[in-house]
Length: 414
Image (cartoon, rainbow, N blue to C red; front, side):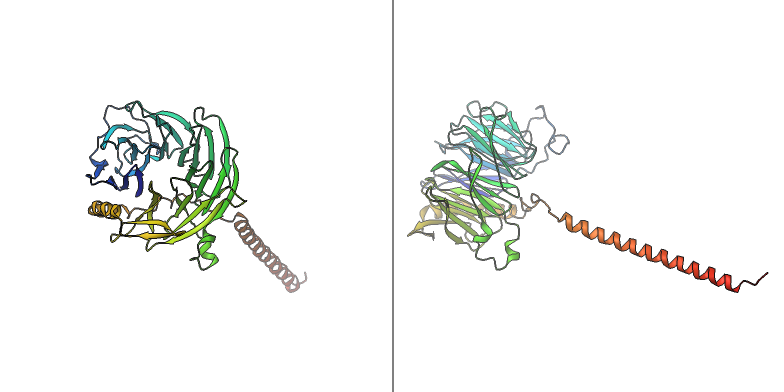
């Protein structure tokens, strides 16, 4: 997973097996954490079976799967393919607090607003809770699902935990008693891949899906407020066939004031930006589109409201977009950008190697087919086969009748 985020004034970039942290305001040494050199799981630790049904022998690749930053920006947690869960503190200096172990490979993690707990979702559909106050304490099972979890977030008042899965469902549960389900947000036609609660509208939830739609919910009641098909907003699609292709929303991020939202779709060199308003029926309003020279790997807003884009480009791996005169413009001569790019460029080969992996959404799309068309086709085949059999049978009977009449005519009288 290649991603970009912010931990206070530190910009965080993950790619392949490494996490990089570069301070954007001060000239400080970058922090680099390499999962391949991190602590290995002790052999005497009690192992549990993995999601594939086999033993939990460590055969992971050490690749970073997900990371999360605490609301205060002072803590960061990451999980990797070898089932580590690493907790860091970034101020006054970077150091890791603990390394713990998850049962199965994780897909998403999030801190509670109080920063006392860390919630971790895995590919088997379980959510575990890990204590931040007691960093050596093992995780406890919080809740379970019947489907793979792809996204996880918590309400801004820590009242609800919101989970999204491969089977198009968004579940809103009470954080302290997750067996108590508050609502379901139903309406997507493919897996739900991204969730975002907005600081300016704490009761609204944005969700993105493999069906190419962006939906706005009142998550406490489960009611859908608005739905936008991002393929219809993309002016580069030249035909209806292009608009029918699979489009996956892979990232939803909002500015710190919650006024602007950026949406990234997988393998699409365009970013869609929106504003939110409580006035009128259309609460999610398209604001502008940013056309990029190549497909972005990830996007995120910094604390100052600028949009940072991690690019699939060795020439310019990072770009910054700032709101100027009601439009988002690329800014080049920014001290922060030069500082971060200079520190990050030596590690670009690692990022390029990680890009050669398969699309992480490729296996999540459900294969659809027309049952009625297949049924009618097979029915037509059966009718044709029956018709041929009847025709063959009638022909055979006719031949027998002719042969019998011929024999009766040519037979001599006794």
